[in-house]
Length: 502
Ligand code: GLN
Figure 1 (tube, protein in one colour):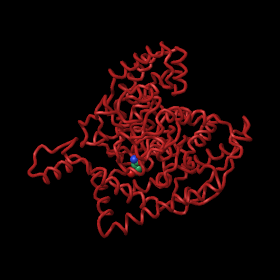
Figure 2 (cartoon, rainbow, N blue to C red):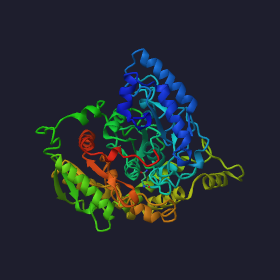
Figure 3 (cartoon, rainbow, N blue to C red):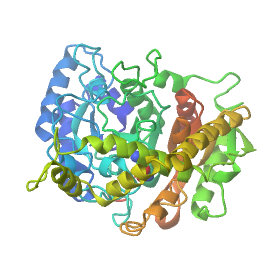
Figure 4 (cartoon, protein in one colour):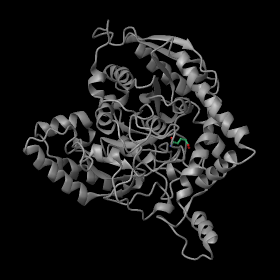
């Protein structure tokens, strides 16, 4: 197997066994990244910094450093601030923005936080394309151009973590970071045939993650297997005093949790006793038949592994769309107030008084989707409309979360599709925001409830494009999710399929 086909766990073993050095691996991947520039996955490649870090990792390894991801190349969605490179959030507003600190997730995966615990030792090869301020489902809202789906370059890779998904699917990187506010890890993972997990809200620190909708934003890994996701998530997660919504829990070993055998399980039936709930609303008539067939096939495999399928209902699934598209823009309109041309980021070159400077700066710096959301958000928070929209949405959000808790009295995990269709052609939905919003229907409920969710490759649908199975767990059930996904991946090879050109 060539180096770029190997996942995180295999690479960790190869590096430990000294059959390859981090420098060789990094050189190999940098050459691939260069050869696949037209994919639009990277916004910046840090070849020099990556190679220097790889050499340093090789020296550390020779000295017996046990860091779990030592010398493994990854890259970060360009919404995590980094000192090594500019952080743009996919926006002209931050085209030249250099952060004075690293995001907690970046530090923990890499060299560790200043004055804190040592990091996992992964090396960063750069920053990955994404929708502007993570607003989008196709990566077409990036101010720096679209990213392409490696399975069909004329199709979108999904979004907003589209660059992360494209890079991992195209075997340019074994893994990457992403963020998920309403589906932005799960949906691009699904569209590109890789594995991604959005943990429970509060599991990964949001410190240094440029804010979109603070009550929803969560970081997570995109990789090719559940095992690789578990390794990254263990390194990126954990309490952080600098994020007021960080969950105060001891550090978790998600890899060990993933391997933890269920009581009553056997080698042939590792999921014996696991109840998987299927909400009827996740299988509407409008669901593409190719997606439905792939998801059903994956569910049949889970059944073979011992799981029991339970029919149930999440009656407010459809309402997740209006609820999310009120709450997320409301929070965005507040969070994006800081981009005013005064403290950092873009400032209009020509302007009159202060108000004119604000106006021109924001008109020039933000793209159309971001402006649309700021206007919607400002409207739903304004006097006279707050009660009618924002408050109603908050009440419904609570009810959606309660619906899940009711389901979890009848099942351990919930399953369904990630998206109603496979990846669509570039440009097709670009002028129709509502159509794009509607396609978020299956990822938004778990986001609003703050629950962990995963996308696991489940074969292929129309045009030979990948389909993802979504698995949703109860709060802090990441280990259980990863366990089920890993069992599925031990028994099937959907996650091993690579795009034709790789
Ligand atoms: N597609 C959703 C949106 O546009 C979700 C984005 C995300 O999760 N960052 O808001």
